Image (tube, rainbow, N blue to C red; front, top):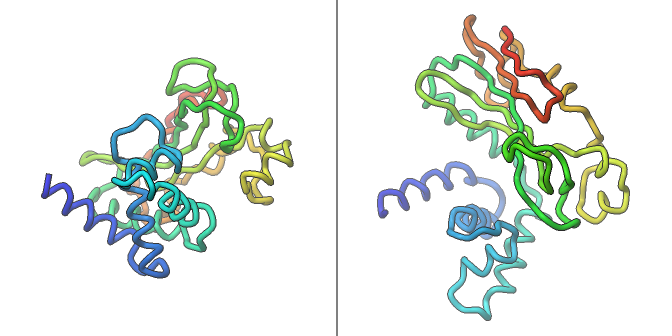
Length: 218
C-alpha cells in the first residue's frame, strides 16, 4: 500500500505541477483521491464526507472541492496533454486510436447531460450521462488521453439548465456520427500529445449508441 501511495503521489504531482497556487494543486489532489475512495456516489458532497474525519469539516471540504473543479481557472487541456505525453512514453509503437462512448448511470435533473438515453455500457436505455473518449492503444497496453461529456439534444436546447450548470455557449448539439468524421487520420499527429501513429495504425470507432456502425478504418 505504501508503494501505491507513493506512485499515486508522484503521478498526481506530475499532473498538477505548476497549475496555479499550491492550495489549488492540493485541492486537485484531494478531488482525485476522493474519486478513488470507496463509495457509490462520486459527486462533491459525498466525496467531501469521505475525505475528512470530523463531520464538522465536511462543508469546508465541499466548498474547497467545488471551488477547485467548478470555478478555479486552470487548464484541464494541459492536464490531458501531460497525460498523453506520459502515455506516449510508456506505450511506444502506438498501433491505433480508439474512439468510443461510455455511459455512467446517474439520477436527477441537475447534473449536466443526465437524461434517459441508450448506453452501450449498460446495454439498455436508462438515466445516465454519456461521454465520448479517445484512447491510444498498442501491444503494450492502452490509455485514455481525452474524454468529454456528450451534450444530447434535450440538454443542448434547454437554455435554463445550460446556464444553471455552466455549459459553455460554444458547446452545441452534435450527432455522434459527426464526431467520427473528426477522428484522427493515419498521417495526423495526436492533437494532445503530437504523437503520430505509424503507417500501420488504425482508428477504431465503437458503436456509440447505434449512431456509428462498428467500424475499423485506416
